[in-house]
Image (cartoon, rainbow, N blue to C red):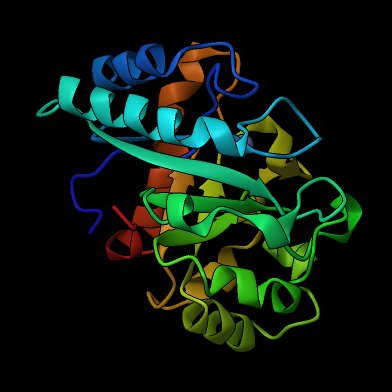
Length: 230
Ligand SMILES: [Zn+2]
């Protein structure tokens, strides 16, 4: 996959802490020529306003309606973002039946000690109950997985069927570079075996919907276009 795709698989809307409705986000994605846009609102975290379990069916059907409305223009995907900090999100009480109706599930702060995120091995049982596409959002791979060798990390991500998101938001930079740029050597070692996603984490600035070119350029430069999950 990936050839000819222009994807943004990480966006927030008025269903959680974003400023725009899903329709406005999708309309902007269509105007800007994206081929795929995913709505991925926060799910039950005390960190920010977020989707509750009882909202989830309505949320999914709203996004599916948009998928029909924009059919042939931009593909609309439904996802959520789950906070891997167990003090903020009840990870053992996730509604797997509904989550598995989604197109993708993002996990943030996995192995991220500075944000209280659980380690991969501690949420292995949760991840294995999710049968849809799943991945690690805006991970500072170089820092969070520094104790693992590159090949070991690759093999673990492969066996857990986890993709890695390349996030372009200003928040996810260090020393003037995006986390994914800092992890170039590691991502190169994935050797096409780990799925890649691109997301901008748009909340309040509509222009962020299509801020994906730098990440697409990175993937192309590394010859990993086929690794894109859409
Ligand atoms: Zn997000």
